[in-house]
Length: 492
Image (cartoon, rainbow, N blue to C red; front, side, top):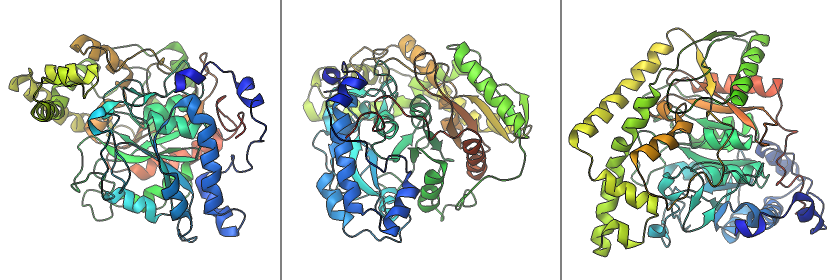
């Protein structure tokens, strides 16, 4: 397990291994696909390289739940070289159905659950030529505030092992930051792509609500959760967006393939902080102020604006909204076991106690939560009547320590409110439905973590995010920054 190995230093780990870093670590997925098409490497060889990387670093970081090595080896022989990614391996968050692969959602309740079929989103991921090589760790049912569960243990951040990669896409983010694969799948229901992208130095995206193909077994869409990727380049994410967006939805024009920046200059609203919950740290504030200057240097106009959402109200209404998910889960477990959910032993302590609390929420409380959430799209739309985009911190701090949350602690409204402080910029965006991204632009915080910058666009304008992301990537290339616990420094 991760805790047993984490005490080793980078030099100790490197000296214990005689192999040199493999020659492909600096390529993104698009670049690897080009090498495959040129005959410089085969999909079969890449599978074996990635397996060696996993075997070297998963004992330290603990990002994997279910390896799919044999499945990947089999698929590698038949993936079309003219597909967009031509056989490049990818890791998938353990919260989506991949046919024939165990899906646990980080819970003992689903420890033996094996879906029989891909969801539509995964069908397109595979049609794009990506080769699924394993599933990545999550907090139980995405309901924790570190990447930690009782089934697989805790995932650690490759930039600093005292820290979590954070929240439910943390297993995927840790793997990408460690250089296991250049592109990973995640879901974002309250910031779960953007938050770990920030703490791990990755580009992470939350698309507009209902834009993507369904990631649900029933073919529907979750109101707050979206599927997309985190990774080491903007172009990888843009290419997969083009391939996995739902072109039959009636809400927006397709994004299409975004291949670079635009010459259009933007009016960008800068949010230094949002009142309530927890204050933005001075270090994070300085990072965002620096990015605001960068934007002005690039010719954009930056003006200070207020954050559209009430942070205190967001934290207050969160439990009542998610009670709609927890009460059916509680009822299912109690019917299955004949025992109270707290005694059944199938949920972590936090989730079991939250389920019990959820059952006590009144219809009036639920109605207030619904009213708050229904008002958010209008509040964000009003903000975009004055600006083209909003820049804010991704989270108030650079990251969360691995011991800042334990899955068996007891839920309370006050504790939940404190935990939600780090989500005060990302969570309301999911409720509003707007597209958003975390861009890695600041390196070398005092704790060693990167600091991402959060950009939010008007509903449906995902293309503008990608265009700006390309421009920022050119201005501050992230490719030369590597985590200490990565394939760059720990030969595999």
